[in-house]
Image (cartoon, rainbow, N blue to C red; front, side, top):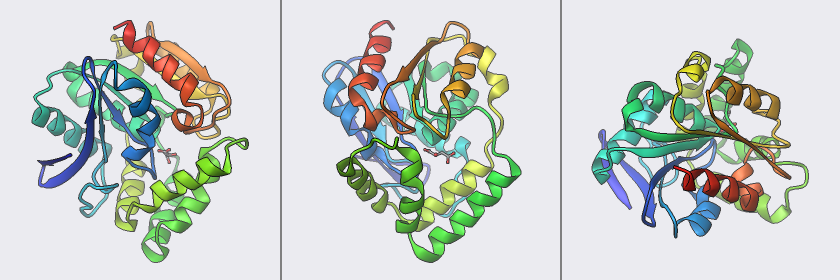
Length: 259
Ligand code: MLT
């Protein structure tokens, strides 16, 4: 499906009925990474799964894409769908967008799902790395980004089949979108001060073998959000929702059923 919002076309899936849940994808993927959740959970919940600007089937405007701008797009999509309040969740970069959404549009949030993400901003070194990768993508295309990033996104035990599927998803993105998101992530603010102010139901999820948003760091996020739920997904790295969808879906379903 497509929505014209904020001067761009946003591609999204809108599946199922019931409690509406907005799920925001990680970098450098797109909405296709939520297929295991669409397959398993759309019979119980309404899943809204967009391609952020710059990704998948959405328009690729010039970057940088600030996390706040992504959040503005998400709220415009909810307006387009006539939805006042939804559960908002995301993996990694999708989590950065979730923090931005909460910062600006808290009244539109029924509950939060913070998955394999970080509340801290980038270090100077990380910012430099992002700019180098943005230029690399612009020069050489997305294949090189997929090759360098995918090993970090999965646990060593991930199957060759899963690696190939993810490689194909990344390959459907464009260099300008990849570069725009890298430069936008480098500019994201610190969200640690938001954590104690989150007074709505929140689920914190991490892959047991996540090397990017490591379990100890995600556990600290959980400890700072009053009353939050925490689940460590076994046999999974950074993209826990695709690596162990059975455990991930069970944790997500259990949380959503309690709302
Ligand atoms: C992601 O999975 O979205 C990225 O690892 C986020 C990041 O590069 O900070």
